[in-house]
Image (cartoon, rainbow, N blue to C red; front, top):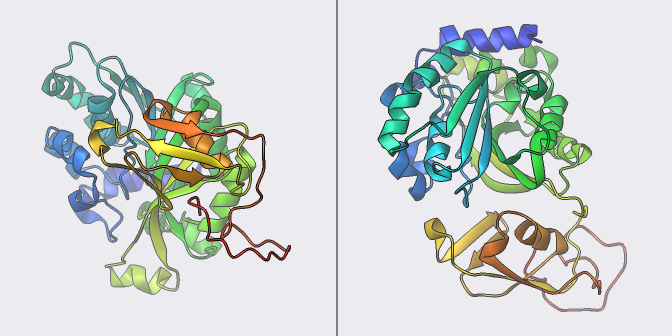
Length: 350
């Protein structure tokens, strides 16, 4: 299913770029942006894997032990190998990429990385394929606990198909936790066809609001922003071309949950973090609006309650309350046309 866009992107990553130092933007994540718990396994990753890896964020969610994880656009396998470390020998990691030069590096180092982790057999495997059609490599429905991606979805010429495939392969309660580049506006067609802008993850960047609409239309209601950082343009030629737009690397959490609403609805539910995640004992960050302190009850909307209770996170939280009584919309979540005399402060969710 290779398209002209696929060809241009694959050539850029397989032949034009030799290492991440050849990039013209700050799209590649740096060590100081990574969570502390990721730095230790990253020290075990071979240098060639890291220098030829191109990413824009840190898509490493917590609670990975024993999980089945899929990495879209895995490149040289850096993130796959880090995930391999966290899921353990009983877990499974699958990487998919369309650039053979990148996959060659991943395949070459697989046995070396497994030996470094002390695993008796590999828990990671790599496939050559296209993220728009995972059925071609026979990835099954409702199989993965988590799908990640690091600055790759923007490279796809068919982003709706990517999200549909992610939704298909995720289990109910599964999560798409991924980083990508987004623009503050819709970009002109010429920018989406420029090989350098495409390869630098700028030309294919979606307007962030259009992405959220696409996510909701696919079935991922209530997309949550986990992290956001500005991307700087270093190269004057790139600035001259696309400097009128502003770009950010955003890490999103999209949960495959049936009953998520399109707003923060208040049912009086309360969530308390148990402090049982070893990499983040004292607090747990669900997204950039929800930081749970160990042992401190927090009033949450029904969507947040479901994200904590109906997913792999459930054993780490106590959720009180149900959906029997509705108290309206959390103040601060959207604008209600109904006037209220209440002066009560906003709830914990928004």
